[in-house]
Image (cartoon, rainbow, N blue to C red):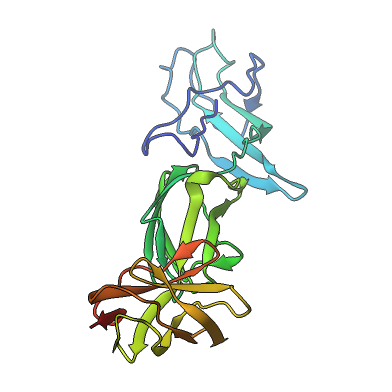
Length: 274
């Protein structure tokens, strides 16, 4: 008989026993001393299971070869001829092929973060066991922890502004890209200089931050709801522009790159009109 345990089975439980082989043939071990006829069964000192062993087939990890020897006590004359009985049996246990299922991502919390990275994201889905990689677009998560088959916590790496797919890789494959795995990388506005100007507009302003895109119209800025003009980004962290006209008051200056807009970062991103 043999028993096995599936990876999904609760700890401490085994599958139903399977009969590997059976035989009614009897062999006599004459090294065990004879007993008088009529001696009660079990009186002799031969044992069950004197020898046993098993090892993995060198050419197939799904096959285990085993061998065991069973020594039994002598019986009466009507049983095994007044001798201890023994049998040696060789057998192979062949494991069933395990179907590996690819993981799937069904949700992210939160769904956005700064281009500088560091956002801790909870990834929900299925079949996360044995995950070997988590990626935000083409970049690997800074770190990740598999909480369960349905949950992973990952730290988002730095990335360019835009929308990326968050994917999980396990022995079953890599999750397919779906709408639910979209993560938005937002540009960051961390400074506005000067941070005040005329309501008539026309103030030359330098905006600092992260994730700005180079090239004409690649990055746009708004002061409140009004769009700035003459935008020129010399690097991904600094742009110059001219403030638009706006009613008196304090507004947030926001950057938009690849259809994603910076989050509010008051007071660092504010400009006061007077």
